[in-house]
Amino acid sequence: MSNESVPASGASAGVAASEKPLSDGTASDDDVLLRVENLVKHFPVRSSNLKLGGSRDVVHAVDGVSLELRRGETLGLVGETGCGKSTLARCVARLYDITAGRIIFDGRDISRLSARRMRPLRKDIQIIFQDPYGSLNPRRRVGSIIGDPFAIHHIARGAERKQRVQHLMELVGLNPEHYNRFPAEFSGGQRQRIGVARALAFTPKLIICDEPVSALDVSIQAQIINLLSDLQGELGLTYIFIAHDLSVVRHVSNSVAVMYLGKVTEQAPVEAMWAHPRHPYTDALLSAVPIPDPQSADKRERIILAGDVPSPINPPSGCRFHPRCPKAADRCIAEVPELEPKLGDEPTHLAACHFPVEDGEDISKSQPSISANQRVIETGLVAGS
Ligand SMILES: Nc1ncnc2c1ncn2[C@@H]1O[C@H](COP(=O)(O)OP(=O)(O)OP(=O)(O)O)[C@@H](O)[C@H]1O
Ligand code: SF4
Ligand SMILES: [Mg+2]
Image 1 (tube, helix red, strand yellow):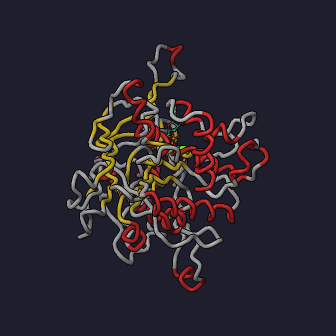
Image 2: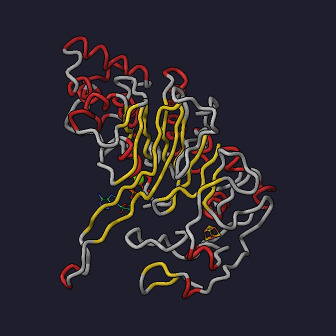
Image 3: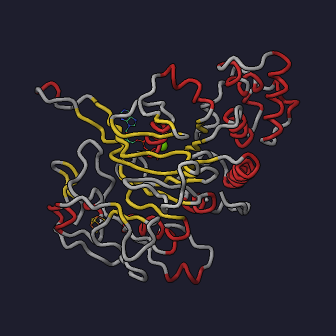
């Protein structure tokens, strides 16, 4: 994360992911904490046609994602709802079994470790969830909630556990004297601090923050972002940071991966992504971010995408973004674009697009060269012309 504090307005953050690793080739194996290779996670679901003899459907939640994350860095993960961010995060934490691919964590292949063999590693990979209300049991005292990891791993009891819990409370800015209070006695921001304290119990090597501030007021968001940033500096933490707010992602991330329908469409160091978005989807996402300077805002055209995200049960052929892309052409329907550097970009800046956005190009007025009925989203449905 950046060391700068987030302005109270809730401004900017960072992270990385997809079919090729983000590394610029100079990262040694020791530098790399997490390497994900062609990760696939499919969910079998009951087909609506089952009674008619149809087979089960499959949700293609994550479909061939690779990423590399260095120690002490933050990878921002963005994309519209349902694109697979949380599923990817849960696979990395091995809360889900994976369908295919590999997860190398701290030099060890954890892709298919049994629950028993994963247990000691759970101390090293923690998730902070979006909902500080739902993720805390209202009937338990905060000291006992934060002390859960010690209880689960049979570490520290009685007075020693209390001392460790109170130390964690102090670390995240909670009053240790509130050890015996219930979650309802804390504000939303304080409750998220409780979630952070619980995640920090064993100073994990990787913390996955899955929309940790989305449920909070804007002014409180900045406090939690700054807390995570300070803890990263103090404890050398490595984060995957999932968020919808691109300003927050820009502020906290070293690099960013943009996901669409289970795939990474672009990944890059954060400043390169903002300065030269190559994928039309990234360009559209960034065009929707409010710019504080009204003069620059005037120059930036909002890119309106056609239709909604298609179903991950039956993703579009070729480039999955083609039914909504203002630049779509015949090739986009037929050929899956490789995630690779475009237009002379650095090896760390990758985009999966046959017709990447040039510097200075305005795609807000672009029209696809394929017709509406070619832009099939799902059987029977086409994007608006
Ligand atoms: N247990 C499950 N069974 C079936 N489908 C699932 C399951 N979990 C997630 N999905 C589907 O997988 C896709 C990816 O979901 P996921 O929750 O990872 O998206 P997301 O990017 O985190 O979305 P959001 O921004 O809303 O949190 C969605 O289509 C979702 O409906
Ligand atoms: S490959 Fe084609 S459809 Fe996909 S993003 Fe690029 S131009 Fe758009
Ligand atoms: Mg999610």
